[in-house]
Length: 265
Ligand code: ADP
Ligand code: MG
Image 1 (cartoon, rainbow, N blue to C red):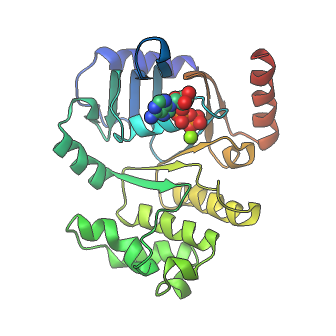
Image 2 (cartoon, rainbow, N blue to C red; image 1 turned 45 degrees about the horizontal axis):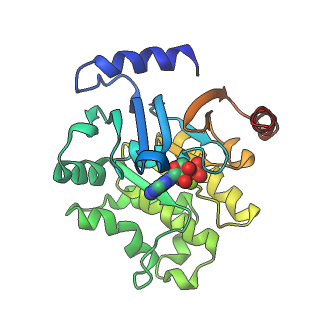
């Protein structure tokens, strides 16, 4: 891990509840997550310190079982932590009650999952505006129009998910995540169910949403090609951050992954 991340993490572990608005969209300090008890206990995350900078696409990369999804779930307040602290948009979520956490998630976080998770009975447009509708807010029509245009979905808005290709469904899920202009979007293996061409479209869009729309995105992946779309890659092995890479290429990410495999035997 780079020294700046561990230094700020160490400060955060003992600092005040509220984060300064200092360009950090999400932060974890000494985050530990264990599943089960006694001899069958699994430590999925082991004292992880991480800062997610605003306005960047950060990839969390690692082999299967390294703790990527667990890290995403803990950062996003979808799962409780065993120890440590997590902040989103300046608020320490590890101190919130369920109701407050639900509201913070709804108002600040967008999600994109491998399995798209669209509602089959709703049209594409209804799926896109569903989270803002549920939150009782009026979607910003001009913003939604921009997002839909950027994703090339103008002609598909009245279609139901079953009438769309996998790539189109995932683009609808991207538009849904962006529609509420959340502080941060978490994407867990967003191209895992797509062929390489549809995957490349979704990845290019996620990167553009950061570079031209100012979004913050965290993407979990085990695919070096997907990771190469990020500004920065964080490598996770056995629940620990073991390295970081700026301006990654798929070749360099693959090389780095091979060295982990070799060192693990
Ligand atoms: P990744 O997303 O990198 O494949 P996960 O975060 O899903 O890894 O899992 C990390 C470790 O935690 C694995 O050993 C996995 O078996 C374990 N794990 C994840 N979720 C649970 C759970 N709900 N109960 C028990 N063990 C779990
Ligand atoms: Mg996973």
